[in-house]
Length: 545
Image (cartoon, rainbow, N blue to C red):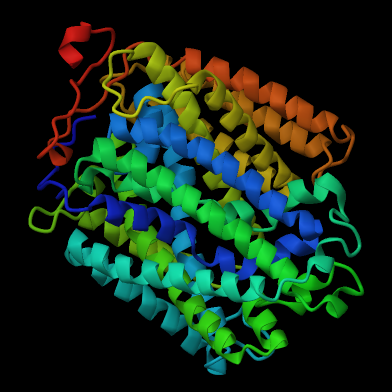
């Protein structure tokens, strides 16, 4: 995986506070502004349980990432760990799906900022809708992307300072909203039409389609900036855990505040119409309750929060591009780091242009958001399998954060993530996983051009068949199951089969990792912290101390 194109090194300038703000800031984006009414319309008051389940699943995955990020702090680590544990082929598949999700997330957040800004500047959106921008609105979105590009182009310090300011605002406004709406809490709302009017299936469906997982997905930027963190073996694990726990608390309280803050008489027709009644949830509730100042504050933050998240995901996408290039399955130019700034500028340019592309008016934008959510949760889900394989095959790898209970947390987190992918439904799963299978076929057909200097092509295939099995089984179950499929296999049997398939894939994948994982010794990333040896197979325990 050696890349001779490196020209400089990352600068370790991000503190624990900076890294925690990156995590919290990437999680608290447009999700808190839109998801609460959507979740309530799907699950009713029981929607708070959806946030708890989503939070637990992300926390479990965060603990796994804490071990990986502390052991091997690498820029773009989320797509490099699969390559380390299972070879370039699996790394290539994860890189493709993660790049699509990250680059489109930047665009989604910028569009969310423009949608809320329409309430103050109507010329930004087409008449009668906020979802379609005018020409002026599109150029405003482009202007925001240009600002974030420049903030991240010059230095990591300018990014950290701007992110700190935006994230503090993003923490204060939701906190004020929670306090004032809880002061108006109407306990009757939690029993009107029943606590769970749509049953537990509503709770399940709200996790992927109500925006819960979309709102939570922010762990990866912390791992992506690992090469720029001070003392990353300590900073990355702590920042991951703190950012997820804090965000889970905020989201659960926001859902409770939303449900309890609605004037009870407005629920006479049930929860189904809540999403339309409160299309801008917390602003509309503030207006209904007569808190004009709170409505203005929420609208202001509705521009700041998505913008701040876009400011994080643009450079995070660049680290994904950089990591893909370092894996050896993308053009080497994107693995270069500019010496003076310590920024992977070629990768940042590509990320910038991809983000602009996703702001174009695609007709199936709602479907795309579901695909993005499913893609991101699956890219998270591979982490437990990578951690399992590395523990088996690299037992002496220094692990500053050694996750106790990995034998339980690993498979459980993979099962939960698989269920979330399945709950997204047939339309999304067939779209996403079908593309992944196509990318697998393309890789196999291009075998003469793929990297085989450290891992033979035969070994790459042996280490990836579990993933092909998993894709095919999830697609078939989605087609036959009860979440947008033909319902030939009714609930809960379809979900039981998903669990069984996940257990098989987890242990198959963990046991077919590379016998001797190659952890690249990268000059770019080891200016201040030495990297592990190039090949960390079964070495002398004394050599890793």
